[in-house]
Structures are given as structure tokens and as C-alpha cells.
Image (cartoon, rainbow, N blue to C red):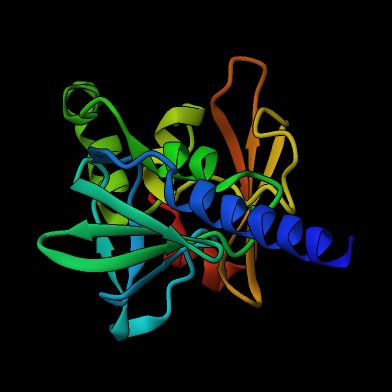
Amino acid sequence: MRRTIKQLALATALLAASAAHAQATWSGWLCCSLRGDGKWISDINYDEGPTHRIIPAGTPVQITGYGRYRVLVTIDGKSQAIGNDYSRDLGLEAFARRYVLAEDPSATLASHPPKIREAIAAGKVTRGMTREQARMAVGWPVSSENPDPQAKVLRHWLSSFAEYQLVFDASGRISDINTDPATRNAVVVD
């Protein structure tokens, strides 16, 4: 009987490992302007200075696999990982589908006014942006701090100590951005 239980446990572990490797891979486009160091892109989207550059919304991405709390991708021919650091209530495939879109957002981006396009490209926000535009500019709000992405107030961070809050009006547009002056200067286009 013990051998059967051990065999069952081993078979279960192997099936779980196979399922993790069998998650979907696809080519798509980056949902939003994200910061990365060439190897790691965190879902919190911190600005960690000169070691990080903005990877623009609409950049072509190939999902190549999954690791522990990460989606393995190729961007501009370079292997990287999008880290599920703060949205771990989401399964990895659902997390991947947030960040790697099946449809190219270029047409949507091109349809926005110049000020909005420039803000998105710079990873910044401005009053009047829709939720979709804000997401394209600064990424998804991490679900550990924002369980409802349709909430009136969404919390984002530029760094561990630089929080900013996007306040949306009834029409779903940013009506205010609450933060300290230094963070406002870094994340807001007036």
C-alpha cells in the first residue's frame, strides 16, 4: 500500500509539473509601457533609475514559457521575464494575458490625442485619461493592493516609498492624481 501512495504522489507531482509547462504560449504585443532592466519586468513597474528603460506599449512579445511567478518572454530578440510579484492571486496564464495582448494596440494608440500618446510613451499619466489609457501608460494596478481594477481609486507606485493614486470620475477618466510633489513631477504630465 505504501508503494502505491508514493507512486500516486509522484504521478500527481509529474502531472502538475506537466500542466505548468503546458500553459499557452503565443506571440502578441505588450499592453502597456513597462520598465525593465533587460532581464526582469515587475508587475509593480517601479522606476529603478538608469538600469531600467521603458518598453513601450505595443512592443511585439513572444511568450516562451512560465517559471515560478514569472512569464518567460522574448522582446527584441532578448529573453526576459515578466514577474508576477504583486498579483499572485491571478494564475500565470491569466496574468500573462493581462500583459501580452493578442491584438496589436498600435491603432488604438494612434487614435489618441498627441498629449495622451506622449504620456503613454513616457510611462506617465494625465488628467482626462481613460482607464485603458492609464493602464497603457503605467501598467495594470497590482491586484494585491487593487482587488477591483474598476475601483474609483487605483494605487500605483514609482518606488517602494513613492505611491500615487489615480482617482477616476463617474465617466471612467482620471479626475485627480494624489501623491507627493516629487512623485507627481515624475509621473504626471500636466
